[in-house]
Image (cartoon, rainbow, N blue to C red; front, side):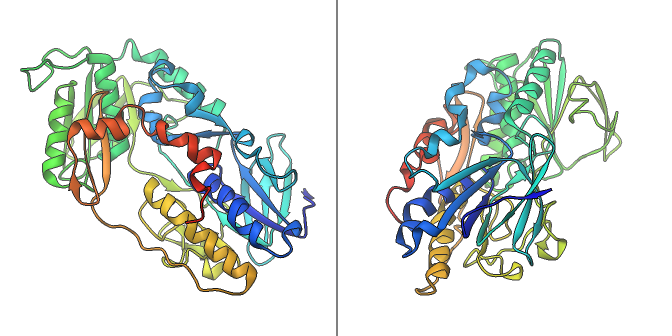
Length: 409
């Protein structure tokens, strides 16, 4: 293990997705430029992948490269930071394996198998969360591993007669809907249900309704859209046992599976996709800093108070709010403003307030969807227009390039 040399004051950002990329841009544009000794600082960005993935698009992207523009789905990280002065940002491809908050350093595992230690002056933790299925995210690996998982899955789609998706949240519903439309097509104008689906798709959820963050009427409408695509929903139940145990996971991604439900019912699946939520990427963090599996973060200032000064957290890894992209984007200016306040030792804290109003958009197939924004129900066509047409890819260009953060907000 070697210790990485760095400027006297390293602002270390862990994570190369929405929280990490946005924080890096905002800090470079509006924090370092305001410091009297700005030349002493360097932003170091660490990510497991050299490319940014628009993870919300995975439910459609996992089916075929033809369904979404690949040049927007995967974007080179360093290309997005060319506007900044040479030396102001250093990018390191690697994985955080240990945070020593007392010594104020992070150990990083590099692709060549070696480790390096990065001392930091300030730290922003934005390592996100991993999904149960290797189809829905990077999950601690680079983009090539994800592409290989997609390729393996696609190779088994043509012969699949029954696909089971476990989970009732947006990822599960979107995945089932995309598969239903791709494999079965729609039911026609006057049919409420796909009568002869090429592939039966079953969703199993423990909840009394799918999409628990939305009102019941929207969940019911979503079930109707799914039925038209050959998708059946089993509620108030759960997948209790899987045989083989690693079916649907890396190494047995396309294994046939025997699924035993909590009520004793047996389902035989040609393909099994676990989509039962996410797990925060905190395995490099001391357990004393965690709360219910996530990094305990001050819900107002987004500081990690128990870890020491100048340490912040943003996104799915943190405890301050429920995971949501819009919540991450609202948190970026707060993290940066409080970092600036702490570095300058002057000014007032900026506070984060979570918007708890009903807000969630869920495409179902390539033309429909359900959702609400700020408590207001949205029509299906508007869900399609905002999210369903390309799963947010229309927003990521300005976000990844930093154009969205040109003005300090």
